[in-house]
Image (cartoon, rainbow, N blue to C red; front, side, top):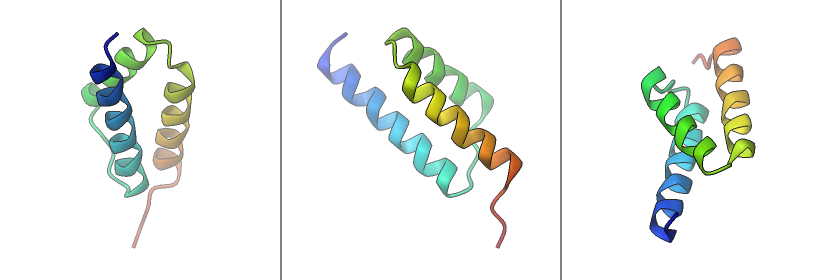
Length: 64
């Protein structure tokens, strides 16, 4: 995989993490596609981390 693609995947992972921290739940399609790309690049650690964050958001939604 090219360096540019790695940078893009890293950026998308960071963006998704920020969304989750702000209480914004990404669509299933968005999350699924990013998950597929990360798994394809053997980034199981990032997928696990994002899954844990998503589960936390689902179980304990942010409320103002």
